[in-house]
Amino acid sequence: MSEPVPEQPLTPAQLAELQEAWAEFNEAAKGSGANSVHACTRNGKPWQQDPAAVRSMAALLRHVRDEDTTPGTEPAG
Image (tube, rainbow, N blue to C red):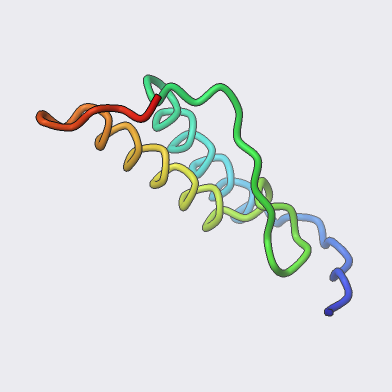
């Protein structure tokens, strides 16, 4: 098992990318029906601080929302 890597402060460019990723996530969360999200990573870094992980979660929410609104399908419930 790998040791967690000490966190380095984000550069302004990294912070801007993270903020853009969170904007995408927030947009995807609207209307998705999700009340909360819990996820973990394999590298010990919180997913909330990784733009790629945040975007992956946004894509997952969009996929679930799209499946729930596709004609001929029923939402799981």
